[in-house]
Amino acid sequence: MMSKAHGLGLFGITVKSYKTNADGSVDMKVDLTEKFKSWFMYMERLEEWNEEHFNKWFLKTIGDYIGVDPNE
Image (cartoon, rainbow, N blue to C red):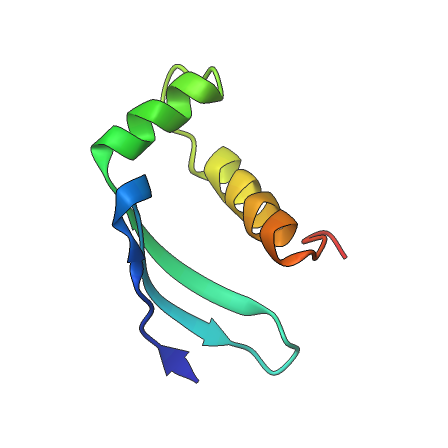
């Protein structure tokens, strides 16, 4: 099932869509503002944008919020 979700515009992250898979996992598509990217690079001490680093951080952050370890 593909759904549209509300944005987290205040934080610079907009969830464009999400899809729940048969195994219970979820695929999400997000848009990020340049301001968020700059903040993220500063906080994570990155010299340039790193999509893989962001994805790991995002999964952990969402997992912490809902109480699920994304590595399980």
